[in-house]
Length: 414
Ligand code: NAD
Ligand code: MG
Image 1 (cartoon, rainbow, N blue to C red):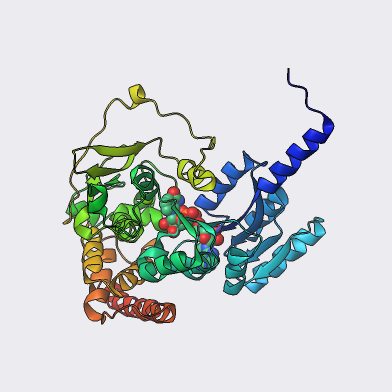
Image 2: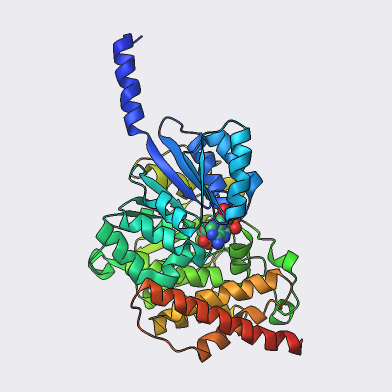
C-alpha cells in the first residue's frame, strides 16, 4: 500500500484544484445544457460551474444554481432575472444574477472561464459564441446556427482569438475524431476524399410525399433515436438539420459541398465517417447519446467517463444505409443550394427556417410549408457578400420579416 503523508496530500489537492476548469454553460436549461451538467457532475475534481444561462425558465435555472453553485446566473429577460435573484437570495445562495444578451457574452468571455458550452438554440446564440471565440476560450459548439449564419466570421474569430473549437454536434464530433488535424491545408493533401455525414432520416424516413403534407406537430416531435429540444427535433423531421450540418461541416473542416455526402443511416450508431484516398473509411460509433461528444469536448485530448451505456453490436445486429430523398426532403436541397450560393444565403436560409419552424410548432403552417417558406424567402432576397456581424444581424432580421409576410399569405390560403 502506498503511504502518502498529509503534506503530499495537501499538494495533490492543490494541484487538482489548479487543474479544475471553470465552465460557462450557455443554454443550461436545454437538452444539451442539462446533459453537459450531467457529465460535469460526474467529475467534480476536474470542472467547476462558473456561469449558467437560460432564456426564461426561472424554476429550472434556480434548481441548477442550487445544485451547481455557479458564480453567475444569466437570464435573457430582466423580470425573469429579478425573480430568480429573489428566489436565490431567500434560499441563501451567493450566485449573482445578471440579465440580457451582453451578460451572456460577458460570462462567455470572462477571464476566469476556460470552457464555454455554446448550447443556446438558434441565431440567439451567435453573439455569445463569437465573444467566446474572440476571448480565446475552449468552445464546445453545439449551436450549429452560429456556423450556418456566420461561418466565415466565426472561424476568423476563433483563429484570431486563439480559441480551441470542439464540435459537439454528434456528426461533427465524430468527423473531428477521425479526421487528421488539417486546418489551413486542403483536405486532399491529407488524403481525405469525402466526408460521409450520417442522418437518421427522422420520424418520416419512410413517409410518402402525400403523407408528409398532413403530418402533425406531435408526430414531427417524436424523433426515433434522439431526445432533443423542439426546434432541432423539427429540423430533423424536415432534414433541415442535416442541411445545416452540411454547412457546419463546410466551415469546420474546410470541405466543399461536393466533398460532403449525406448517407441515411436509421440506427444512428455510426455518427459519421471520413473516406481517404487509399480506400480507408474511418468512422466513430456509439450509442446515440450526446454525453459522448460532450465528454470528448470537455476532456479533449483526454477521455472521460460520460455515463453513456456501451454499444452492444450483437443487440444492434444490423446497420442500414440509404440515399437521401431530395423530393420528400426539400430542406436538404435548399441548404446545399444556399451553401453553393454562399455569402448571406445560409444566414437567410437559417432565419427563414427558424421562423417557419416556430410557426409550425404553433400550428400556424403545415409541415411541407416549412420548405416552401424558406424557398420563397431565398428566391426574393438579395444575396450579398458577408462583411460583418452587424450586417448578418440585419440580414437575419429582414429574412424573418420576409418569412412572416410569406406565411401570412400561406395561412390565408389554407
Ligand atoms: P433546447 O431548446 O433544449 O435548449 C435551448 C437553450 O437555449 C435553453 O437553455 C434556453 O433557455 C436557451 N435559449 C433559447 N432561446 C434563447 C435566447 N433567445 N437567448 C438566450 N438563451 C436562449 O435546445 P437543445 O436541443 O439543447 O439545442 C441547443 C443547440 O444545440 C441547438 O443549436 C441545437 O441545434 C444544437 N444541438 C442539439 C443536439 C441535441 O441532441 N439536443 C444535438 C446537436 C446539436
Ligand atoms: Mg447532429
